Structure formats: structure tokens, C-alpha cells
Image 1 (cartoon, one colour):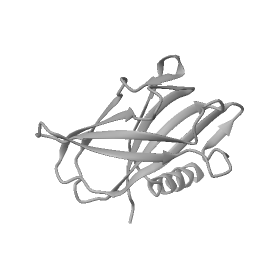
Image 2: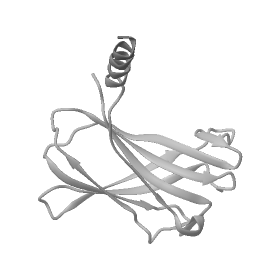
Image 3: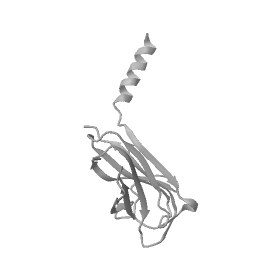
Length: 154
């Protein structure tokens, strides 16, 4: 009888966790992100009632030379040929130069919220494209970038 209670307890605890809807990261070749390389992330939206939160993910070495990153984020909507664009700055370090993410040895990981609450008005397939728009056409020491999209629980 005790194993069944343990199973029910684990089931109840995991059902209360935030549901990760979509997360994908792509490796940056040679750890050098060119402004010409624009990774795309495609996901399906079936729930237009809920609010969502979108985060930008980035892994870099301790030698990344900037305290931020500027991005051009393009969104392609289902059933429409046009895209929208948003230019945003994502801080990666505080004013003293201390990285804001989690670090282990020389590797730093950031997951910075870039949109919340976010509503999707149509069901279907969406594509988010990331482009770095820093003054340097090639950003050194960037290992991977990605996005995370999750429902906001009320």
C-alpha cells in the first residue's frame, strides 16, 4: 500500500510545477556569433486564452567582452506572410560587471525574461528569429542561444 501513496504524492507534487511549453537552444559555431547567423525557433500555440512568458537563453564564457547584448527579434505569425520586429537590450551583468546568470568555472548561463505577459491571438505555428545587433559583427565567446516560452500560472 505504501508505494501507491508515494506514487500519488509524487504525481500531485509534479502537477503543481510550472509547465514548460517550449525551450530550445542552438550551439554557436566556434563560439563566434555572426550578425548574419539568425537562429529560428518554431513552436505551436494551441491555447490563446493563457498568458505566456518568453525568455532569452544564452551561454557564454567568462571572456565575453560585453555586459549586455542587443537583439533583433522577428516573429512570424501563423497564416500571415509578414513578420514583426522588436529591438531589445538584454543585460547580462550588473553595473559592477558581475554576471547576472549562473556560472560554473568559466561558463555562464543566462535566462532573461524578454516578454511577459505575452498573448497569442491565433492558434498555429509561430517562428521566432534571433539576430544579434551589437556593434561588433561577430560576438566572441558565445556558446549557445535560445528561447524559453512558458504559460503563466494564475
